[in-house]
Length: 145
View 1: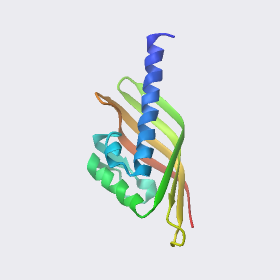
View 2 (view 1 turned 60 degrees about the vertical axis):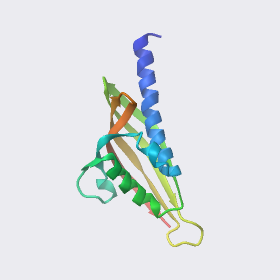
View 3 (view 1 turned 135 degrees about the vertical axis):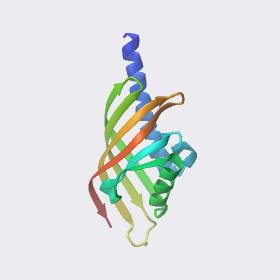
View 4 (view 1 turned 90 degrees about the vertical axis):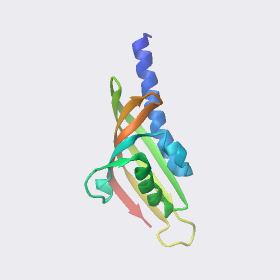
């Protein structure tokens, strides 16, 4: 296998690892790990979740939105699959399926919220590795109980 193909495979692995770190950071509430997934400034498109227009935010402000969203739940589990990755030099796109499961303790009202859809992210290569510079959620279904 030539070096170009090896570099492409390495980049794909690092991009998928970035998205896995994002999911792990949210589910474990490891906010330092979360900040290793994004650029310092990020475009956050949460329109399909009820937010207005896409927002340009500092990473810590984007983190505050995510923290608030999951703080109402005792546990979350974010599953990501079917990565379709395109790499163009130091920029990439990654569209993948997600299922986000949110649970409250037994007996609480609204014990769960399940959301499915796709992430449509843009990433850039930095000296620290690939980082998400545009975060877009496309919700295709949701159920609660």
